[in-house]
Figure: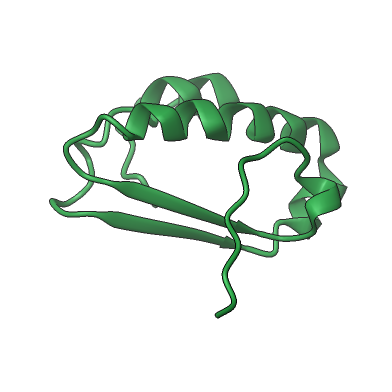
Amino acid sequence: DTFNFPDYFGMNWDAFADSAPDLSGLPPGDHLVIYDDFTPFAEAAPEDWAVALRIFPEVSASWQSAPRRVIVFLRGPLALSPNLPLAFSSI
């Protein structure tokens, strides 16, 4: 729902990886996506979380060349998000 994917969206990680680079379903302007406390998902579905960690950087890279920015913040323990590029904030 957040990304307003088309009705035919397949509800799986491959569909997410294929659909997420196309931002045409979003309103104009820049967007901020915040996933606050991914721990429950990461612990309940570790295989899916591992796929998500592999796909998020790929999709984020595709957004770098988009005409509008999408910034994604994942908040949770570093131990559950190895190898992701990190940004730190004191806020």
